[in-house]
Amino acid sequence: MKSRSRLRFLLEAIEGGIALCTTFLTWPVSKRWLRNWGASEQERRGPWAGDDLVSANLAPNTRAIEVAASAEMVWPWLVQFGFGRAGFYSYELLERMVGIGVTNLESIEPTMQSISVGDEVLLHPKAPGIPVAMVERNRHICFGEEHDSNAATRQDVERSWSFYISPMTANTCRLVVRGCFEETRKRSVWARVAFALEQPNDFVMEQRMLRTIKRLAETAAPP
Image (cartoon, rainbow, N blue to C red; front, side):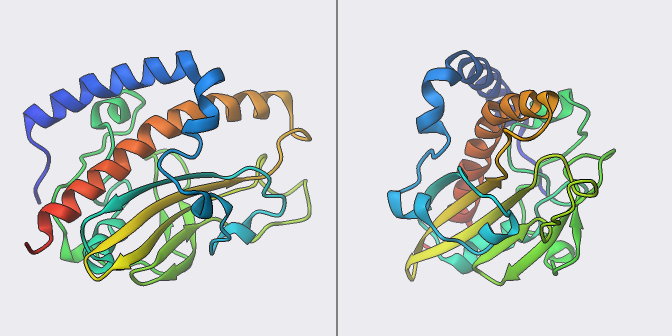
């Protein structure tokens, strides 16, 4: 297993700290752009597989990046995503500071190359995993659950979170990450506050994740 170098770990830690502070300070102004960082109008509109996992999907976050590698070259990195697997491809030091003792791998691991509907992928060692709701090889992995109309039994804010690979040519593709959230106005005050605080943090971690997967897939792609 190959992990990132100490130099990259340090440089990305510095970058992550600056990005996090800047994003939180500017979020009231920058959120309209950062919510859909890198995504085209068509990608923002969708629809995408997984959107229907949320019953009142009013304002999804859609972020995207172009990758100079085929969908088949990007897919193995997505399959092994998760705590206890290849990690999150994001700011490792920031993840460790919130109690996630993760090591983000920089190699494709054969033992981690399987994922199926019903599997649970961990984001934190002390939290329940997020269930895999939909999988199509070389195309998408959608995390979430079928929505439950019974408000007493379902989670506070209904949501889904998904990876998509959209081929452009034989050797290029778009990598998209999309978060769909139920309208929060009817939820508790604390749920709305927590949701608001999550948003800038999600952007910081997701943009680094996309950029890292792009780098890894392009480095592994044949010339």
